[in-house]
Image (cartoon, rainbow, N blue to C red; front, side, top):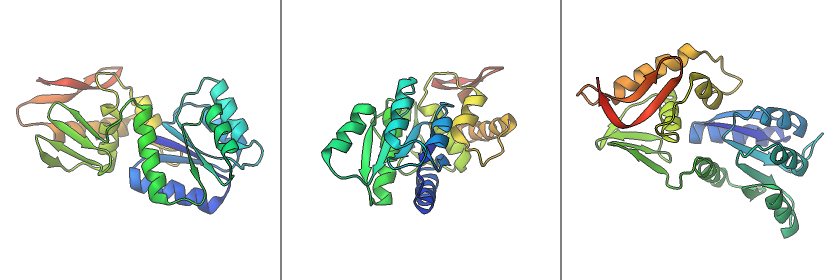
Length: 228
């Protein structure tokens, strides 16, 4: 998953970004003003936007209004130092999905971030299941038939993304856009290598494939594992 943090307080932005990267395993981009945030949000690659209200160039409410007017449905978590119900009501009416008053606990922030990403994918429970696979988004663990699988962070992120789109073909480009931030050098062969390793680790020893490769189109997590 990929998150955009729009926050002009540099230290806070770094703390928030680090908490999300390390606590959720998500890719994170940071914008230090509303203008940059609006530009990045326009690319539409994000699974969540964390938005401060008091921003230079374009303030939070204006940015949110522009994002929603353009038809962008990405979940938005507002960070606000403003007091009073009027401010919160305004942001919710503009299209915010949740808010967190400053100062806040990073643990609570992380919990809200994970919940909003799940909700944005149409999933309420933190534990996802398909066939005999179980993916725990809170613990970032994967089990097959009750046994724990040792996945690399990249392999876990790919599998989690596919879990959120069962039976849907996901292209390499979509995986690159949602799993890597701009600080990473992104190449499609990186995805191919990780998927190959992931498929090998998911193998149940009976020759069944959980991830289907569709040549020239991408990958699909199958509802029923197919034999080779």
